[in-house]
Length: 238
Image (cartoon, rainbow, N blue to C red):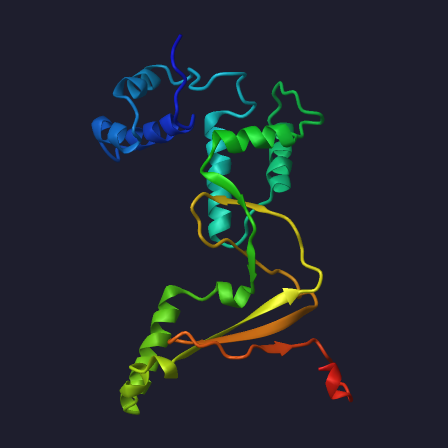
């Protein structure tokens, strides 16, 4: 009995796509994906042959890889998808492209979603961090220009001694604590350190806290901003 492969079923497909696109030789691709040369040669001659055990998925490898690229690109742009979004998209696709499937009303269930994530370990569930649309529009060039302007100002004012003293360098950032936070995870590429979702509506009621730290490790007392429309008469309420 042949031994089951220890790699993801989608790895041969990605390797073949690299080879068919002429990105590299078959030898270098087998080394890149840590796969036997015979496996890829067999897949080239038998593209319709399954590379995994068990029943065939409802969607083809190409269709599932398209979903993976869609998930990856949207997560990188700040619009990560939830599991329900993927299931609804697959349901709509199956309605437009009828084929035999075990789903009720062409809508996959949680079991299909778990199997999909198992077939594509490069996609994982993450808790996103919300950012405003204005923050999402900041590019690398904007950040580099800001540092260049600050460096120029320091030189013009002869303040080089300030940036040499870590006790005089501070960094502050604010964060909002939602009173009624939303729950729910999204799908994102594996290994992505930060997953953001852009707020498309007005922010819910929250408490803003400003944290400030010095370069030598000192922490300033945090500043808390409450959502008051007017300052209370009693100072003990602040």
